[in-house]
Image (cartoon, rainbow, N blue to C red):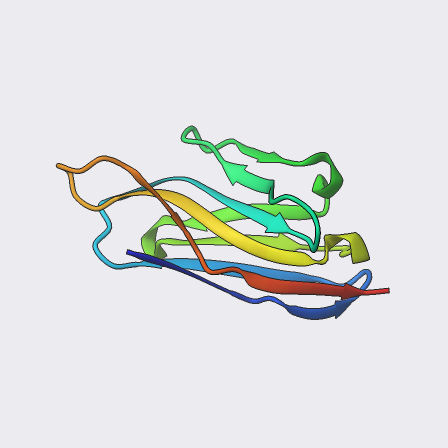
Length: 120
């Protein structure tokens, strides 16, 4: 099983980017998809997540600007980022708990990260 993120890049402040994260391999179920980010010199922080009931949660600094979503048919999650600010600059990582078969338990997987740079 692998997670592969894409969609990062360089954007001016106020612009938008859409990150995608596709899961591939033997997948029976996906739980708790989420996005983290890590800025230089800072700890990795949870940006957005989808709970098992479908509710979404965001850190305060991105509420109203970022939207997390998932497409179960494509085993893909997204992070729509609008009104980007320079302080959003970081490497963004996707993560999810994935079950490979009905006989296995959930294991946490991480994507390799995608760089988002917001210029002022």
